[in-house]
Image (tube, rainbow, N blue to C red):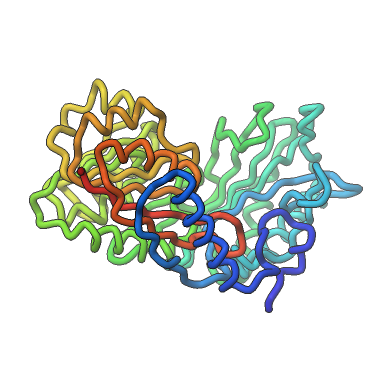
Length: 381
């Protein structure tokens, strides 16, 4: 059994020491237990899975000063310690070359590391995104503004690398906030395109440095295709896609439906969704930048007579107010997918007032971790 050299210490994976079949068994058992505890009577389908290695298309690494500069992931053994990553078997074969080049560059320039307690220092995070099908890489260096980045040299060193997935885009992101999260206060394109492109099936999607996109694109293709198959649209259905992100699911469904509406809070993300629809020549889809609850209760005039409701919320799931608004909307069918089975089953329980759950189907989007996606199919009772 293959193990990453950092597994015993790095907090990125939890299950690498378990055979993959056992990992899948643990995940299906969790779904069955949740169905029982929430009293959701639904058929539990087998776990859908694909490649278990090098599947992630995005990683965020952290810088630390530990008797010298390191860049990697937080330790699962020691609080505040960052493991200096040399390989990542769930992300990319290019990991070592990119990280080591950036570490050497930053050491040579004597850049300081940001301290989240004193709020002083320069280097904060490193974002690497890869389009797995089109083989494109995007890099974002997250810094404060206490020092000046040698942008020309930074770009030169990165472009000298011979990578499996060549670099198409390089950013510097300025983040002076006290938050430990990556905040995009300012982003400057240092090289290449402002986006990379990923191809899912016959569709092209543009991904920015701060765009939400399914973390496992090879699984996403099957996932979206399966949703379309389950719905079996006739061309007459109206589809409402809540928490639509950059429009991936809605664009996949548009060819089978009459009209699709997508709702997402961020205007910037909605613009990306509109752009994705345009480059794929999908004309029967519209996007709204709006809070989902407000859209359903106030601005949702286009969402009357909805045949299919698609829901893919953040990990926290749906609020009670959104569930009540969905019940008032009365879609004929609901597809609810979530990367948090706990919040999914809680919400399914709330929806069963008016809906029956046909099935729940787990998808292992995150091999070697405790996380996975669940797809559920509901019909109005």
